[in-house]
Length: 179
Image (cartoon, rainbow, N blue to C red; front, side):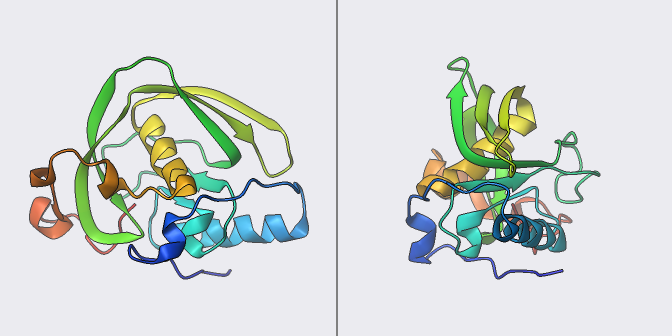
């Protein structure tokens, strides 16, 4: 079990555009993915992007096998490894939802996201992924994929009156673990 350091907002590496994955089903890739899941689980994350641990690749993981204590009302999202993702909004409708981030610890903000999306890409073996999702699942995918283009969720907030410390906005929610 290897838990990697998660970069924090202000680190220039979080603002880069990640490079496509070109080699699938390699020992190095499988080890990276294993480390990412270990890291995400260690902080009760809902997802993690490779750039958040300083790896410049278009690779995100997300999903929960159980109810996440930081998002107790959210539905379970299937555990997914997604490489070289492409997101296509299926309609212009957006939903506002509260987001946190492991790279922006202790804060939450109200973020607009497309309600209904299609995402495509590949798994770690190079097999195609093509899913149509909505709700929390769509939000998590969009949040994680933003990391691949150097965007952190505060950059998407439209009303900064809806942004603050988790412990103030949501007393009782564990502010030490966000994403």
